[in-house]
Length: 374
Image 1 (tube, helix red, strand yellow):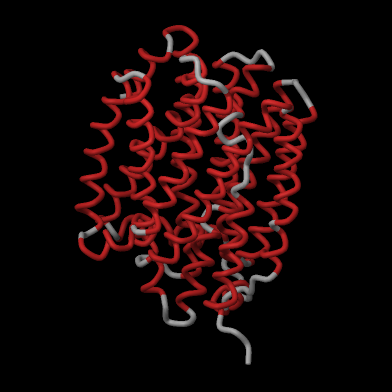
Image 2: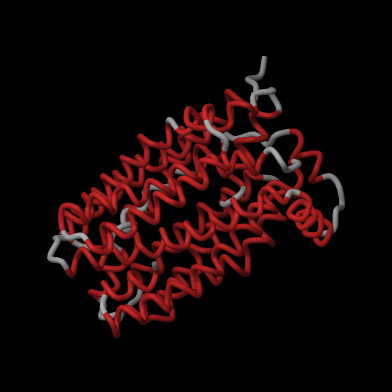
């Protein structure tokens, strides 16, 4: 007797995310580029190229994922992570560094939406979709634990050579192919791929979903705003901590703690969801985020680190609840497409804000720039 998809796919996805999140340069790539004499403006530009590739390809890859399956989409995304590591290691030229970040961005588009859709449809096929928030919480927890370990290990590897950092990324992402190959596509996806829906049909239907459910408008907008601010704070905090005199291993340690704290928090988000409505939690998180951001801007050293750690958890709590809130409103054939549309707009916001923020840092310094972000 064959195992149901819940027992076959979910463990494979857990193993996959643990390996796929082992990016040893996660808290160090900005430092890596500054050592190569890149300015903050340059770094902002190449990061913008990452998000430009997401803006361009997010929706097409989401449609491909809905039409042809989640498994192959994840396989391609994982392969592009290896391409990213190779390009980062192979050159000092800003053009090729930009190509590296664009490769990573393209890989993200193949993975975003596909992960959540595969988890949800695997549960739905066995009538366990009510467990989605809990399963997604464990999935996110494993990813954050993995990322935390990668940041800690990466900080020590970088003390010897960044070559070890990027070779390590290549090795673990090669290993990540193994659990992906064990995944089986849910039947609903296989049925969808046998149809000949036009791409414009999936796009127009996703837009209709947005227009139909007015209750999702504010949550989606708040989610994108917090996501954009969190990305900017986390990545530029690397150089901010360096400017304050923290060593590379110490910075890796701070980001490792941030990830581990997130792993602890995200595992129990489903308990919060069981007691409070998503709309109420969404508003509360936004308020808490603003308070913590003010503390982050005006504090120093110990309190600065504490506020940074807590600030990042606001978005960590929001993410699985937001995903579950949206999933319940979508049909399987539009699931990845809709999330890709949200991701494309989110990346457009980051693409514009990231280089602008780097330009402000080069001219006005970190403190004034963070105030501007607020």
